[in-house]
Length: 389
Length: 156
Image 1 (cartoon, each protein chain N blue to C red):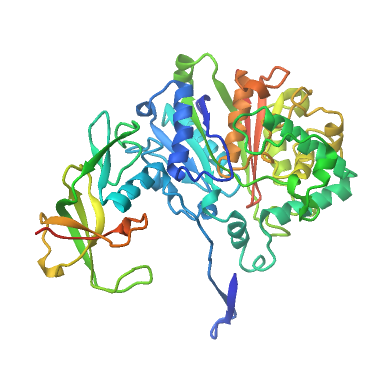
Image 2 (tube, one colour; image 1 turned 90 degrees about the vertical axis):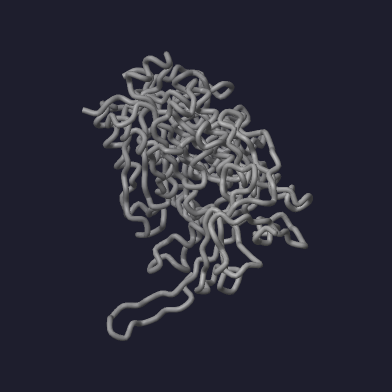
């Protein structure tokens, strides 16, 4: 039987397109110091340090070596993980597994990406399988454009619904001081006016490239209960893999292939006795690179029936004040430092459970939350968090 | 991208030859930039001192690896120091800026507690010895790069 693991510290940097004032490791150090301060710990208390990013997106190799001092890892065990878009959730899995195994009582888990150093779209385009992918890949944006079109035609959702998702994200981001894009968007028309990036995705339909980092402190049950009266328990975590390039590097939007989200959700819910996700879970922080993808993910995660994702939006169910808030932080469409993005989902969900999310704290009480990650190699990671076990 | 497709003569397989060419832009950071500005403008080599363990880091770093304390105190170290170790490269590679033989050494500057890796110049490699006193030679045109120190030569 695995030991229980709690999140006892949360820290993140603010997020921007460029952070020329600092290098990669200095930026990551900001999140580490914030997380240690939140946990009321010093660096010496930490026994192991786990890091994650997509190093080809930054063009800086072995970044975990370069940042040993800034992340307080000198002389300590720990590994860097790199699993595409899910990296920042895979590192949560890594830390969770090590602490649950009883090897460490206090571990630091870090996701980061400094995208002003490299060219993410070039790197994603270059990372497809050379046999089927080279020459026909368009990076991430083209993938989500295809998914948007499929969703639009399959579900009956209108562009207005995607715009409503974008407005919801911006309202959240404007209440989140760490968010990257805080645009103050007012109307559907404003979004419809933004130019096409990759049809049918408009500029405002897609996430930005952000620089930022997020750090979490994980504790064993004994440590956690001594340290804080607000531990957030990692109740369960699931990773589902699939080989990427069958009909697209992020999956087959036509529905001919398996959706890893559905496999992950079904398994996670079953083993945790969740029969009605929208009733049994209080809110979600999901990895939605585009507004269209958010509606599609509602369905894959069984937050609603097939072809009804847009109806949740229309009814305001996923708003901050709604019955089942999704991405009150503003989500990925407002802030996307890729390697940190899934870590931020877990951090934000943990803050909601603690009641410490500040201005973007949701209206309803949150005792259970789910954080999800999505990645280029067609992987899904879901983390289930609870106030009490 | 794939630049060239090759059909192997002896096997029924194709080989794709390509080259990953990705632009990058790197910030030297707050501390690294100040270290380089001092060299560029004042030919001064500066380190940072840990407030807890007093170790002086050259090149200047922002955090002490032992104490995890922020290092805000800047101290000037000398342009002379001691050669701790060295090597001489005899084979050219595409990433080496100079034709071989190229000597590299680690120099502990006077007043620093760490070694600095740099090129060694104005010396016959056969004359190099661990423990030699070395002196920094600054480039005429300095741009904010570690090569604003041209190399270290044996001190007079």
